[in-house]
Amino acid sequence: MIWILRASLIILDFLSINVFLILNLGFIFSSERKQGLFLFLFNIWWIIISKLLHLYEKILTKSSEKHYYFLIKGLILFFFVTFVRFAADQGTRFVFSEPFFVPFFQFVILTSVTMLGGRILIFLYRRKIRKKGSKKFNTVVVGSNNFSANLQNVDFLETMNIWGTYNIDAKQLNEITENRHDSVQRLFQIRNFKNVIICDNALEHIDFDHLIKAAARHMIRIYVIPDLKGVDLKVSQLVTFNGVPIIKSMSEPLEEVSNRIVKRIFDVIVSFLVIVFILSWLIPLIGLLIYLENPGPIFFKQKRSGYLNKEFNCFKFRSMKVNSESDFKSASKSDSRITKTGAWLRKTSIDELPQFINVFIGDMSIIGPRPHMLSQTETYSDLVKKYMIRHFVKPGISGWAQVMGSRGEIRSLQDMEDRIEKDIWYIHNWSLILDIKIIFLTVYNIVKGDKQAY
Image (cartoon, rainbow, N blue to C red; front, side, top):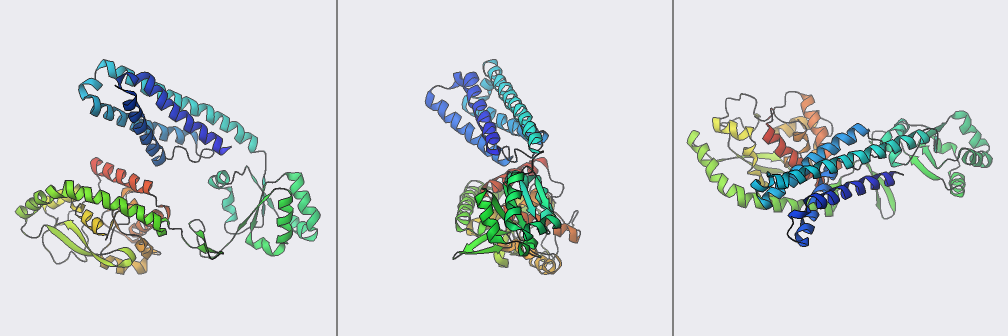
């Protein structure tokens, strides 16, 4: 059912974009080849937007309001890029003229109304199947442990295609153990269950071999929830070594060689382009401004904690007067050490651009946990739980913690704990799409102005 709803939305959206684009703006294209190229580019752009905004995820469980909110957000971004692309191809004078603007406005209205209207119909159908499904219980839960309460989580229910759960209490459990064959079969047949979830504290009371056979006979799937004290199973990963299943305490996508290669290729290409086309002329210009205000080195080089806690020299444009406290004292708001030029560099984050050199030589990545001073690592590694996990990946010029507001001066232990929590979330959820999303959010925050940047 979930895949049908998701497929319906995807087909609706892509049909709306392509059909209305051709009908309203097809006259612009000088050839079918050019039309095909534009359609290809716009479809790719919509795929990226839908992925960044999770437009086709949690179809059954996400509220319709959230679906509409993110769709409108995605449409605004999509129409803006479409307009800019046409302006680059046809010229600004043409795109603001009536022959283009009227059909483009029609394209915007028709596409938006179709997508929103289609979702209204799909969500009405979703409400209908929800009401129908809420009267059913297709899963039995045997026993309980620390994680069994989370079975009611809507994301879990959608993922497992579960309409509802039926918990077996001690009395019913005893009936099963006393008269296994009859009671198990009766339970499966009468209630028409499709799944059995067994919590580990019930395993010792059940003839597991018999349960597997009975479940297979009635086409029922068996799941087991382990309860490992001190291990967060929500972020754990099941791996196999020589046929032996092993639970890893935390999944790390970047532990896979293929993912590391993809990330490194992306880092090298982007950092090379930045060094050649931006830093090549920006370094002399910024260097002159820095030197004229406060003679001294252009770059500030500092030892930071890197991948696997290895030290490396982190480069920045020098934003402070030359001082002896820089290796152990972080910058604070209204810091007297910061020069006027330095204040501007820090406010716009231009001071961080030399770190693309660190990225190119392999010390850093474009996106990752921000590298901390050695003194901070030494202090907080004992104070903050899981602090050192952030060193499982290369440090970044920007990161998830920064775009989520955790940047600037560290005023309390809680500030650092919040950053580490976000850093670990990034390590656990890494994808190239997430990196691209963080890059966009970083640029957006710079343009908007970040109060924490100083």
